Each structure stands twice: as C-alpha cells, then as structure tokens.
Image (cartoon, rainbow, N blue to C red; front, side):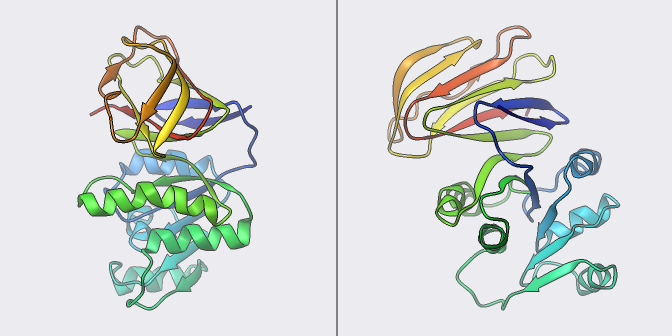
Length: 236
C-alpha cells in the first residue's frame, strides 16, 4: 500500500509507489500556507512556468523549472536561475502546454515516478479539461499522476484493480463525485457515503455519480476493477 498525506486529508492506495514528484502548475493559486506545507513533504519539486510565482510567494524554491516563461515575470525567472534552480526553457510557439512539458520531461527522466499536481484548478474550462486528460496522456509517457490537489479540491486517479481509501480529517459534508475518465469503469464499489455503489458499471457518457456526500467521520472507500476513475473530493 501507499499513503499520500495532504494538509486536508490522507489517501491510501492499494498499490505500492515510489516517492512522488510535486509539480506546481500555473492555474488557480493554492493557498501559500497549504503549498508550503505540502512542499516540505516532498523531496522532488518541479514548477511548470508560472507555478514558480506561487512558490516564490510562499517563500519556497523548486528544484526544476520547465516552461516557456511567457507567464512568469522575467525578474522572477531570473531570480530562480540565480538561486540555482535547474531550468528547461522551451519556445513560446509550441504544441504542448507547460504542464504537459513538465510531465513528459519527468516521464523521460524519472521513469514512472508518481506525481501530485497543484496549481491546476480554476480559470478556463479548456485548460482544466486539458490538464485532467493530460493525466491519461502522461501515463503513455511513463508517468503516473495520482492526484490533482489544492486546499479546496482534490481529484484522485484510480486505475483498474486498485482501491483507494480517503481520510478527510474529520471534515463533514465533503462533496464526493466519481468521474469515469475512460469510456467505461467497471466493478466500482463506493462505501461510507450517502449513496453507495456495489460492483457498478459507470459510463463516461452517463455522468450521474456526482455530488455525493460523506457520512459522519468514516473514510471514503473506492474500489475499481477496470478503467481509469477520477475520485473527486471538494471543500468548496
């Protein structure tokens, strides 16, 4: 088993993973205190372009900066370089997003290392859609995203024949949604929520498993036999 501790909860996967990589992207800014706390629990920390700004505002420096620099003030980019941050700079005119570049670079260099992505929520829908489905693309590039997270929202990614237990630190009325990221997700069990599931088939084109709620202080339990399932928890 593998446990991932976050300031707003803890998730335990049935599989075993190596120590994960933290990637800070340039979407909605995570709270500085949340980012600083999660930063301390990782030993490998990367930024995708303007995710650098969020790190600097939280008083921390990443190990690696990947991107084209078009959304990061030049002074802050230069500050990172002068502080010894390893930089991989790409042209502004390119097909891939800065987050995709960071993930695919990690796939080549870190060979299957699991990833937590923050700075990924908010903003335009097309950016969010691309971020989420980049997780499937990243899997083809030898990198596994375990969760997109900040202090308000988390989306855990569960693959076939895996289970997941989520402790939400005693919070009540946490929103729980199951989002099939493949056309079908089969053999889905969901326990310790208001509306439970047992050996269910979820279809991507029929997204009805949204806005569930936790029951008391019990841990959320999810099991999946086939497919890739997004397990969303929100504290909005």
